[in-house]
Length: 170
Image (cartoon, rainbow, N blue to C red; front, side, top):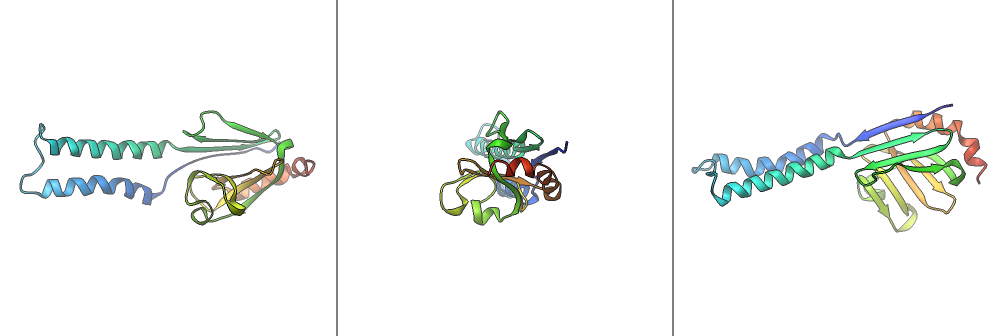
């Protein structure tokens, strides 16, 4: 029995820079002004606190995002936290096709994250946090799900093991 297990998070340094930039953009003008850091009881101080707090909250939310994937003899399990609190399960009997594919997330789905696409050939669901490879599932009802992976070779090996279960559905 072969099992593929992967857990991914957003770890892009560009993302970190984008999150820190607004805080720095607010702090530098305040710290370099002649007035210095605003006094505790001024509206300027509380505006600074609110902007910084909001950016930190968004940053923490993005860092909490986690894509979990598991493939075993039963089927494919996936969870995109915090969008999905419960793990989703697709048994092999519901899968018509399953393979690892290379894709461009920005062109195909408009970026990373939990993406629903309602137009063209890309119709379906994409779950990804980075990279350019994904596990493409085509279900018996024609619905497509793409689950991003950073370990495309391991995913291919495990999918080859269960290919007979997939082919028996088609």
